[in-house]
Amino acid sequence: MAEVVDHPESSRLELVRDGHTAYAQYELGPGTITFTHTLVPTELRGHGLGTSLVEAGLALARARGLKVIPRCPFFRAHFQAHPEDSGLLNDAGRALLGG
Image 1 (tube, helix red, strand yellow):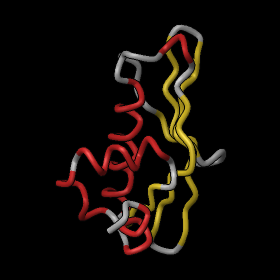
Image 2 (cartoon, one colour):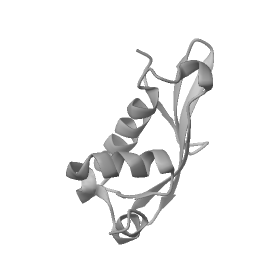
Image 3 (cartoon, helix red, strand yellow):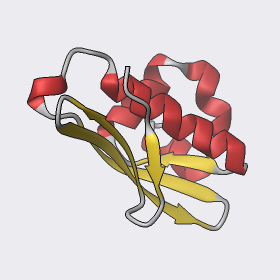
């Protein structure tokens, strides 16, 4: 499995496989990381790469002590399916989930 790489100069996490790039776009703010968009090319879908990007994004947030704002529907779906990660959300992130 290809490794997820943080590219802070473009504010995104990337995973390259078979010549295609999947990515999770983010914005850093004071004490927060907002995930704005996740893209997994059609050719790479169904192999868990989106989940790998989410896991890498959450690991990045933990490592930097940041709270998450999941504007991206893929990240929101993760938090809905994994309430054990809700401690990473700030108030704005919880509001996006309806909480």
